[in-house]
Length: 323
Image 1 (cartoon, rainbow, N blue to C red):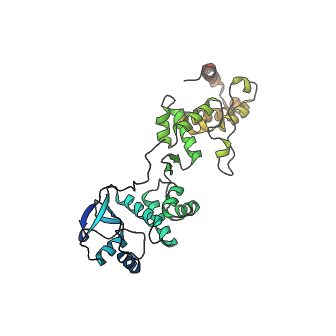
Image 2 (image 1 turned 90 degrees about the vertical axis):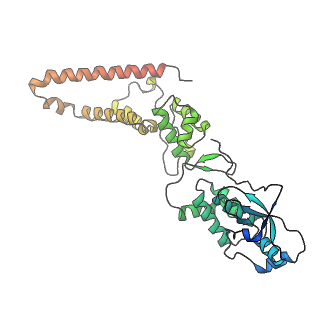
Image 3 (image 1 turned 120 degrees about the vertical axis):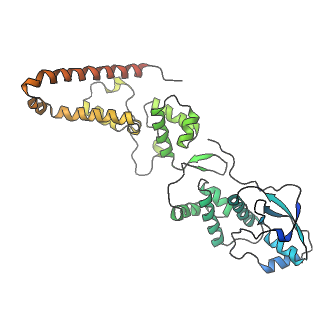
């Protein structure tokens, strides 16, 4: 599933506007010390033309250029040249961090960590690597910070550096897709993908695996310590002749059946049947003589109903798969 690149556009317009110094607000900067006077003095006495400041237009707050503004004041200037960013305040802060990482005075590790934590809270759907690149930290550091400092349910997907949405938990995404496919087999791939937080190509693979009688989640993607669910039987030829308890046990291990309401109902019905067969003699002995005929008729009707269900399933097994 594609999504526009989450990285705010950093390229300023070609034409800079001239604004009064007094119209600008202090930067929402990741720095603990906003202005290093020695650095500002060095810029002021350099004699060179300084680049325009980057300013958040809705608030007129400086995004990048605090020391250049201070240098302009030291030079006695009443106005400075600025270019504007029109995005959100949260994205403006991300731009400020990126600018401080790429040039000027370097941020300390503490400042970069604080910036990463703030971005984690404002953009929880961004990937660890994407935030790490913007803050100059390692991806593992951002991941540990997310687990330690940002509690709560994880978003269904995360936006990577390439702008693509990937599920935070691939196993959960595939299982959710399997559940949705079971309940709405005619829904489009994109519909299921959007609701499960995975790519349409992944939904296609889940549907293919289900059609082949395999676990919708590949063994390699199963979490450590979790045993992959065995593939359910492909057709009646592979299970004919097996005792009912063995067949029911095999069905109970199928994740697709466990994930749907109708599947769980079938498993409960079959489990009750197995439990009843184990107590056959007690059941027969418990029926009063005057209810034997009625109980026999009910059992026969149940047998006919189960036979109809069996024939319907066999017809479905022999039908060609949907396009």
